[in-house]
Image: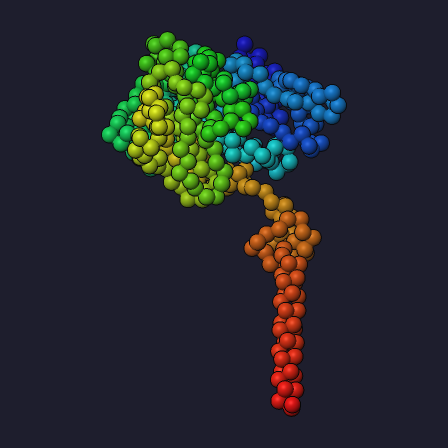
Length: 413
């Protein structure tokens, strides 16, 4: 079955770009820019030959809405294709950078795409550390320990900081290492959450059964990624009482913030299990990893609220930067790839002659956008201000002369 899935997914050419894109899309969700003709054609090719599905064809039939079904056997086949001869950590950044350079991928979700990729690579690294198994055809559908996943994701230099972290509202509570001892993750691919409720306590355990994690619905508050964590050990039943979320907030900005994620974003918990939030500050340049500063519990509880304060068992880790220095799953020679994937592309950055000051100034005089740090971009306003200032000076000068004449006449009388 696995060999058949690999053949159908790769169209018999496992090393081709289309096969690799099809496999990666099935695991981390790739959204193409349907405003571009080349992207629409690529979508159709994936549907035609690489096991992607045309979910919707709008009435105007100008494009189709493509995606991949949540099928564990296809996710397993994709993982095998992507790891054949080269690791996912080395292959995926090059592939994504090329797709972006060719104008295929939608640029609006660069940060979330990188977040899904980092979580998936960390998952695969943890799987590889498990060693040989009885059923190698199911290698990527094994439960992994949360602590092992974090060890793989985060650079070793920050491990002590992460694993000794305390709950946000309980500086005397258990360390993260103690709270998540024997807790498991089990996802092989990402799927989209169609609404806000699907990531709530009532439904989250179902994702464990299907080996999936969620990319949250559009405009979902507080979080972007959610993976279910299984508590109670490998022999415990998968159910609401033994499931708690691991959240991921993706921020592709160049300024940091002390953002505190709301761990009840999916609904009030049905248990008292610890919750973990990862804040990925991908846009920052300097690598830093640290727990959220401790906040007194009474400041995090609304007045009159008698419910247990979830922040007493809520652990939040901030990961700043998107380089090898912050993430153990980013090879050092791929730092520049992630930088190019995350780069916010301005109209002047796509200008092929941006290295020439003369040509760049000529572009900015056309006013495609306005930049406060570029005088030529605001030359019209500066000229207007200078003209107004010159007129005011002339008027003042004229008034001065008028006063002088008046004084002279009075003296004559």
